[in-house]
Image 1 (cartoon, rainbow, N blue to C red):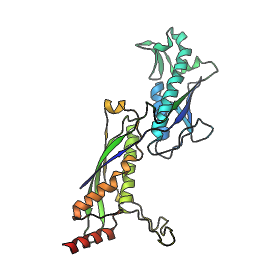
Image 2 (spheres, rainbow, N blue to C red):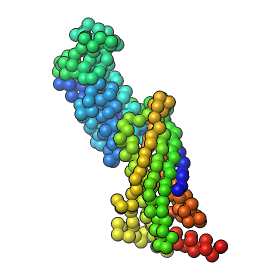
Image 3 (tube, rainbow, N blue to C red):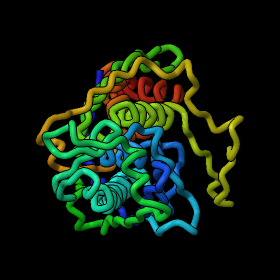
Image 4 (cartoon, helix red, strand yellow):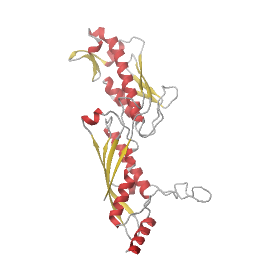
Length: 310
């Protein structure tokens, strides 16, 4: 077995979100960020939905186009912090504008209204309420539009500094030099979790990448021409489904984490797998292999050197 500890930054980038509430009750969030498959759309929809008291499917997310407000480029540990902060502020401001339109119908002060469970109601008095659609109908023909920003480095809704621990269990065949990862356990600190399933998937994906670079991804270079000799999927190997072991993910949660704000998670968990696996291999064979990936020939060479020294 082997263990590794990692740390990372993770503060969100600058971002601007334009949230629109329409008279028919539909809601759109528009910003120029992109989703590279990491769940950016999901995060934006969740933040807006929770702010407006709506289901996630009640939010239309429009991203990835320069016609939308400017938002930072997609980065592993910057996107979620940036887009969540700008979305939160835009949604809060749009809801405040809606409250101003709805307050007369409920005979209440706008500051005394709340959005809960698809309704706009007087705080502490659910009997005085309108459904979301009834409330939005009070807009007439004019939607309400609000813009929210994340200023980046100094923004209070995003933060930096996370840490994690990963433990790897491996088996090494000393006759062939083949390393098999039997199990990996990951514990991650990440501040406020917007969506647990998405966060766990990020960590699982990062560990999968880590296993790949730890055991298989060998770039062969021509030292004279400076050219990569295996720039294809035939000779540049990646981990396959059979190479991925059970992965147990544990995320640190609680009020202290929530108070820190949103911190990026895309990159931190990919740091530790190589070190954890390499440490496990060292413990298994009694000698350290000095470089990654831990290919069979390198394992056998380390074993041979160990035997020669003894």
